[in-house]
Image 1 (cartoon, one colour):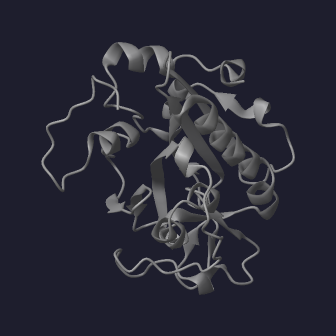
Image 2 (spheres, rainbow, N blue to C red):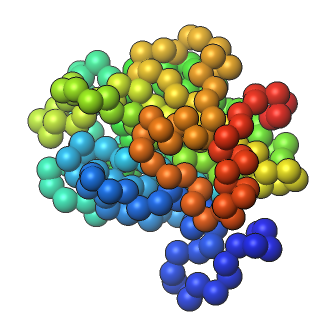
Amino acid sequence: MAAWLPTTLPHGAASAEADLRRPAPLSGMPEQIVEKKAYVASYNKDTRCPNWVAWHLTAAHTDGPCKRQNNFTEEESVPLPRATPDDYRKSGWSRGHLCPAGDNKWDTTAMRESFSLVNVCPQDAALNSGLWNRIEMDCRTWAKRFGSVYVVCGPVLMKRKHETIGRNKVVVPEAFFKVVLCMEGKPKAIGFVVRNNEGKKRRDQFVNTVDEVERITGYDFFPALPDKIEREVEAHADIDDWK
């Protein structure tokens, strides 16, 4: 843990690590924070989807003995109406993980909780198995290469009427974002924004600065960073820095 992070939080409170990975509190939209073993989610009761999901991916967490379960479950900690597995059946949309199962092979509880629908959005099947999956694999490669990364991702909702699925009217996002921060060595960050129908293009075509992702989403990412570091890493994005 970097020396500049606060270390005085009481036992049982959110850790300094959690403060670094999570965005600033949201305004103008519903937000219920849901804590899981491997990730923290900001849940939106109106969309029945997360606003964002954030986690710290270490090199040790990029693999493990736990197999994928494929047992998607209703999240009982959020209010009714809420997403259920039935909402996705025959909807034409895939159940798209935000914190992926592949980042949770290190622990049985983490793997099980990754299939909570608080960590899922309706996602184009080609995107889920294609470009989005490749970016997920990139994040695991970067965690192995650099030691750890902080990841935040979620849906992007345009200012228009949204498609919904199922009896509980789960909102279908028009796009998805992901921002990645590395504090190992010289700090750096990178962002991606992809439409919810683009699965076969190269991920280099979707690189954005964190500042640009903040402009698109209205979120403030990595607010626990010292201001100087935050300004520097969020204004610059170069995929070559991660190779």
